[in-house]
Length: 55
Image (cartoon, rainbow, N blue to C red; front, side, top):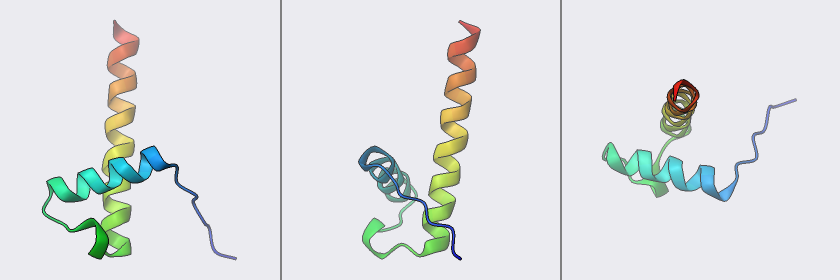
């Protein structure tokens, strides 16, 4: 059975923005490029949480 991730609208918007920032058309992005953008967004969110916790 395949693992399926159901993404929220906010998560999809962040993914599209990240792809666009790196010059990838979100409508034509490959699965690997989308996974890469999702990974970047996850790490960024983790970093932001750590910074907020230090304040």
